[in-house]
Image (cartoon, rainbow, N blue to C red; front, side, top):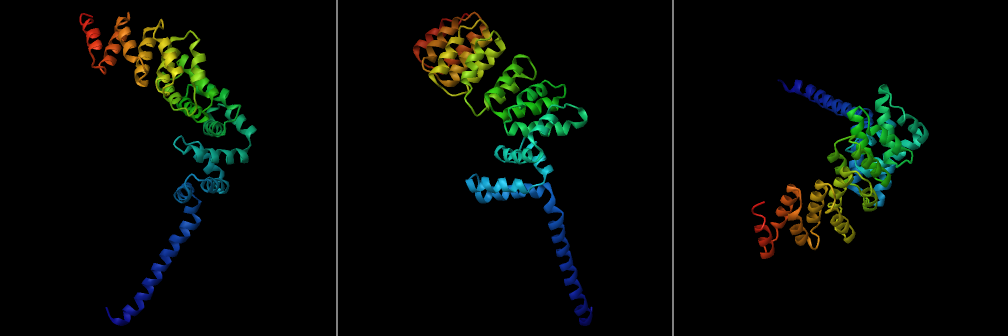
Length: 296
C-alpha cells in the first residue's frame, strides 16, 4: 500500500473509531441508563460510597424517588432484595400508587392479575401496613404454591408478632411444611418468647413440639430454660424429646441431671436422645447411669 493511500485510510479509520465510540455512548446514555440493570448499579454505587450510614440511606431514598415505578415494583417484589433498600422502594411505591388501591389489588386473587397481586402484597408487607396480615394469611393457604410461598416470605418481611401468630396458625393447620414455617420463625428479628409461652397453653402437640424447638434456638435465659424443663413432662413423647434437645442446644445448667432422669422415659427415642446428650459428659456418674441401661 502506497503512502498516499495510507494518508487517506488513517483518517477514515480514526473517524470510524470515533463514530463507534460515539454510538456506544449514545446507547449507554439513552438505552442502558434507562434499564433495570442501571437502577441496580446505582444502588451498588451508593453502597460502595456511603454504605448504611445516614448519608447512604438518604442517597438510597433519593435514588428510589428518581426511579421508574415499574423498577420499584420489580425490586420490592424480589425476595432476594436487600431488606432496607426494598423497604425504601416500597415506601416510594406506596406513596405513588396509594395504600388504598394497593389494598384493593392485594385483596383481588384473580389469576389474570397475579403479578399485580403479589407486588401489592409485597409493598404492603415491606411497609408493615396494618391491613396486610389477613390478606397474607389468605394467600398462605392459596392453592397456588408460588403465591403461598411468597406469602411465607412476606410474613417474614413483615416481622411482627401478628405475622408470627399467622405462621403459628399455619403450622397447626398444616398449610405448608412445618419445617419451612419454623425456619422463618427462627429468623424473626424480634423476641417471640411471650408469644410462644401463650401458645403453649393450647392443646396442640404439634405447636408445642415446634415451640420447644424454636425456644432452643432463641438464646439462653432462665425463663426459656424453665419453660423447656416443664415440657420434659409433656404427655407427647416427641415434645419431651425436642425439649431435652433444646436444653442441650442451650447448654443449660443441670443438663446432665435432667438427661440422666430422662433415661427412664417410657419412649425409647427419648431415652436414646438422653444417652446421646450424656455422651458429652465423660464422668463416673454418667458412666454408671448409662451402664445400668445396657440391657435397654
